[in-house]
Length: 202
Image (tube, rainbow, N blue to C red):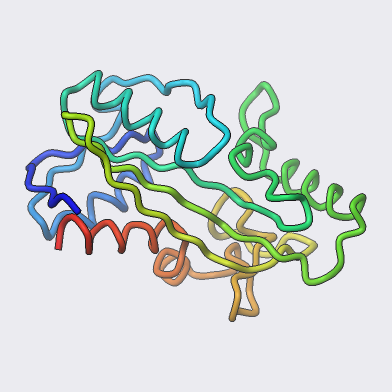
């Protein structure tokens, strides 16, 4: 595993919350983290059918545009009874043409499970793939998975996306009902980031 010894890292995201999380996690290692918006980057088309493929697209585009090492992620919810859907299309299920509507996406998800006659518990996983890429094209891949199940109706106003219908394994509340600090400590992204820090920064 290659150690990251640079001083600046571009996180290929326009999500302010995700950027702030990475800045806080990497601050102890003396790394200055900047985001895609600050670097003036647009979002490349995600044309792959895997989380790894799409994460690599984003990392490669960021490195090519800035010459900086870049960190990207792709993530989503994979539901067993739907053969892993929505998976890489998690955000697409919320698209309306006028922005994303995750209430609509959750309703679509539940309808698909009902139509499939999926038995309870309706097992699912949130998955995250991180790609850390250096300017020479070398990359390191880290994956995190949070197992759980889909519940209905939606519960809780915390979090975002599909959080109100996802109950993590070993818990009796949804991600939408969890305090952010607890959710962030056990999330699929947190698990992937912990592997990255151990492998490349610690």
